[in-house]
Amino acid sequence: MTVLDDVDQLIKRLSPHAICDDCIAEKLNLTVRQHANHKTRQLAEQNNFMREKGNCYNCGKTKKVIKAKHQ
Image (cartoon, rainbow, N blue to C red; front, side, top):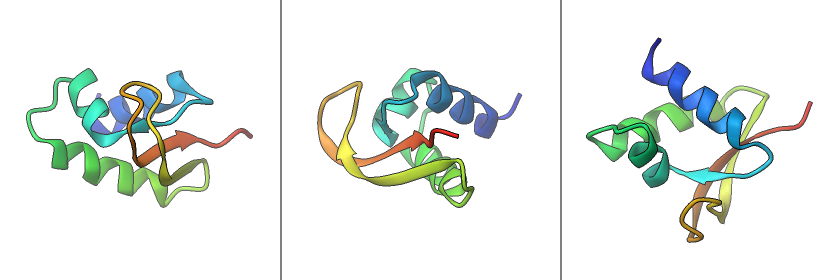
């Protein structure tokens, strides 16, 4: 499984909640936050994900978050 797959599955598991890149990096034990950022931007290009400013379900901070869209 790739990091992209791991990020994808984490976001879908948390649906309908949104999560920020920092919390994704922490939950998946990624050494570099930018790795999570790169993958969330990549997923946001797909129709089934939405990336926007909002509240993170995990840390509660308002920042860029991503969530799975309901199909």
